[in-house]
Image (cartoon, rainbow, N blue to C red; front, side, top):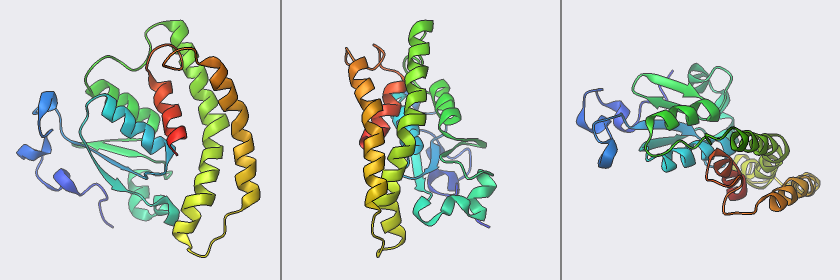
Length: 203
């Protein structure tokens, strides 16, 4: 069994100079974080976007969901339920986008991404729920049919009925979002909900 986090700076001693951020304000204040995930996975993208917004330096390695590597013994040792992404700083590991983003938020620079106003926070969480329940499953279907299945089997022919159904299902939530937005950001200020919907639109 191998340690999937044993790469980059983490392959060195904890007190090695290059276990820390390479430059800037984070130098000598935290270890370089590591992320295991997949570039075509919405929750992995959310975590990476959050890290970028918070000025966190990360090293990444791919867990190939096209070959179900998330179900491998090595990854299940890290994430017992096979949930992506996984983040590690020094000896601390957190699983999933929600926990990972909260950890990055607390360790990063700048203002908090979660709104401080209760009404704005509630509005943000409402639109994040819409994204998770009404958008992400259909984005994942499109990724599976148009990208992942072909990566696993070059002879695979995408199921056009599934593609058309997923695209049709995305119309209502995106129409609702379009009606909602009346500024540069979804709830009036840049926060987590913008990161979530950016990941869906990117994919």
